[in-house]
Length: 223
Ligand code: ADP
Ligand code: ZN
Image (cartoon, rainbow, N blue to C red; front, side, top):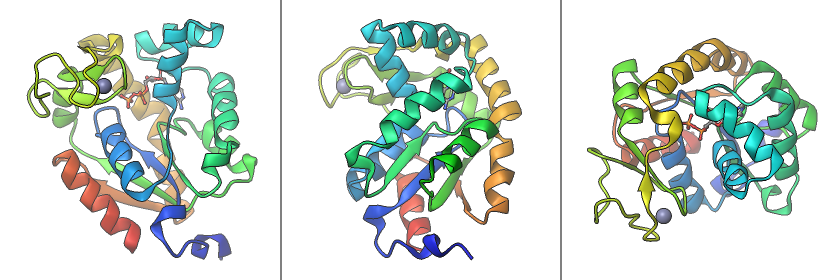
């Protein structure tokens, strides 16, 4: 079964999906794993925020949904992902961070004919989730993520990596956060079973620090 699952014998050519609720630390962990393994990190959230910042029509449209904590419509995001994943730097593997988020998106990915090797599911308690998201700060310039208690920048309000200004994303306010969790439960969580059935799922305990999650991911990938 699934001959392609044995395709990779090293960690630097894997096609991975990082799946989990907002606040699981997916983005931070994906960034680190991406650097260490030399795999591009494809964050659909970052791509949409970038488009919104540029003010292109797609970005303006996406921002309306994002600010409310809703998902951007499938037909938009599937197109965005497809254009990105066919690029040269994804040839030898990638980390999908934030895609797929609906069953339709997962099926569209299958239909692209680019088989994914593993799906890492980041699991943690609801209490930890809410605490993490509401304290989150993002660098306006490079997208790096901090937390007002857990991951403080060296200089208050400034990004360690690039000196950019840290801000609280519009969708991190309490109400939008609740909405995003509800959207996750209803639309994204079914993907866990979808990938479990395909034998592709590995669950990562994401209660700990990002560094701990990075280690757990690397251990899981060597198995
Ligand atoms: P988080 O990691 O906190 O969940 P992201 O940066 O991944 O946040 O995504 C932020 C927002 O961007 C989502 O709430 C949603 O509106 C939009 N978005 C990102 N990826 C997708 C996707 N695959 N499908 C639909 N909407 C998306
Ligand atoms: Zn920065």
